Length: 271
Ligand SMILES: Cc1cc2nc3c(=O)[nH]c(=O)nc-3n(C[C@H](O)[C@H](O)[C@H](O)COP(=O)(O)OP(=O)(O)OC[C@H]3O[C@@H](n4cnc5c(N)ncnc54)[C@H](O)[C@@H]3O)c2cc1C
Image (cartoon, rainbow, N blue to C red; front, side, top):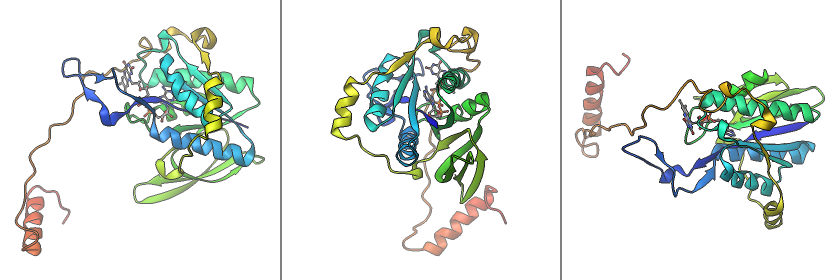
């Protein structure tokens, strides 16, 4: 079985600033990293490769410099790395991004025996929408299992997967037939570090580049033209000054009383 991992190159957001004039992220001079959630997707694919002998392909859509992201995946042990890069893919919203990624996975599926699993991060740390994984699944008509924090079992002969989903305050165990798309959370695993020989081998290894001559997608469905949404403004929310109530050290009970009265007055406490 083949596994596809979707990885995105994102700016290291601890260092990102917003251009006050254009309201866009200042990307110049910012180091790029692999989207952190995607490193967990990658690790899980490699564990499945170690256990079942699956073939793993990493796919990324982005500008030519996103090749560095895929080189990191090669250094970790993926068998194939594909960069989807073309000017006509640029300016894509999540709909257009999903169209391109799904088309590439469909092409790979036709070339290999079967793409049984697609692994994505839960969300990115720049776009933050968490829409692309489900977007890919719906286009490919794969089962979609989001927020996965554990693969409980994978039965390749029975074509079934059972996962744990991390929800608020509880876990859900879900079973689905393959092929399936999983979006994963950090708790899934601890990503490995590349070993030096693999790192050196990755420098020489090649990343395949698929442009739109390869994918042959209708330009009305990709890139800027295929994106019905756009970012009209990016801003940091204004924060109102916090209020300090009483003295919690000297009079914890009285301070708690004051807090409850405040919350009741604002209708923020169920009675
Ligand atoms: C309304 C809107 C308008 C936008 N307009 C523009 C624009 O004009 N120009 C522009 O450059 N960007 C634009 N973006 C950002 C761009 O569309 C997103 O970065 C991209 O679609 C991925 O969405 P996301 O980062 O929210 O991914 P999420 O849905 O949060 O990502 C989930 C997972 O999907 C996979 N994934 C996501 N993107 C990729 C990728 N490119 N390659 C491989 N795997 C991936 C990863 O596994 C990731 O963890 C826009 C986003 C929105 C929401």
